[in-house]
Length: 578
Image (tube, rainbow, N blue to C red; front, top):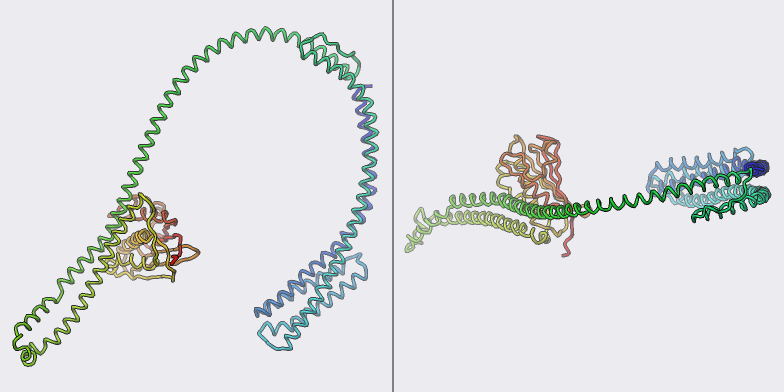
């Protein structure tokens, strides 16, 4: 018998066994289907409805409590909807077909009790939610709370009862399925064992002949072409023996050809090896040339880095000059004001008055009492003293401003010198004080413009700030706002703000000036970019760099030309330990 025929017989045996087990499985499965259908149609929906009723009742109870606690009458309507939902779920569970009469009566009774409880809750909690403190209402609310706990327990017990029935039905179905599985497995084992026994008898004959063929193939692999092959037969193994014999003859002839080809290959390899040695020599020269080029490239990169550092130093120096220039403008204004004030001073009048007193020193009493000039001289001296005191106070205030401007120039230069060593030094300070200092730097030109200054300061604690850098940024921003206000007509307004929020210090400068066009917004902080003919494009670039070095950012926004602009500085806010 051919091997294929024997294999088909084994497959047919397995197929017959499979059909038998399928028939058995279908018969037992119909019984399980009946049990599971009962679970699907009755127990599971009833348990699910009861659980939903419990959840809706709990939500309604919480809504009643919220209505009383927060005085929210709208929660009463929400509580009524939840209670109605619980009643509807109980009614749906009671209306399921196939439910036992006792279960239906129990569910109907629970629904009626729940409906009565909801009505009483609405009557009692309604006045309480509107602020009533009637003791009778409060007592009724306490009774309702105990009634609610009992009603919830009954609902939970009903849900648990249906859940227990559901688990029991499922366990019964699973037990039947397990028994079915054991029966099917046993039938399969019997069929497989019978089929394996028949197959083993056939395989034993095949393996004996295949083992002999395998021994012959091992000897052929070792180069022995005289190995004895099994006898040929009409089955597939016999045809395999014939094919193996033909393969042995072909391998023997190819082995001879391979030997001849190997000799030719050895000669070719020797020739190629000589050619490869020549190519390796040329490759070594190329590697040497490439190494030299890489060294030249590294040197060029080093020179480029040196040039970049020099450009950075130049940029810092430019920033210093720009910031110092802003303050020097204010210094110049203060000096001019002091010079004009000194020119208008009435000190010469005091000199003339004292000279007049000195002239009449011998008859001073008569002069003060009888002479017309003497009688008015004491009052004039008093008035002149008050005027000179006012002038002195003004001079002192202007000198204080001048001193603060010079100190700021010193701070800016010292801070810029620190770029080469470390970040700016932080010290305690209040943000609103820095905002006022920046406004004072630009106070004279802002006053000449008639700009309305609006300070929006939120109270803030003392912070550890890099005061010089923050002031540098604010001076630049206020200066840009002043430049934006100059060309416009009508009211000129500048708003400066300060706030601490979520561990960040946010400083803002806004104006209603010429605004910023959308096409230049992306280049606003680029080094050397400016929209003013007399500008140099260093201030905003340096301010953005200072913001990043303080761990923050500087951003700009504008609705377009003629609609003003806003600049916002955002940096970390660390409280002062003092």
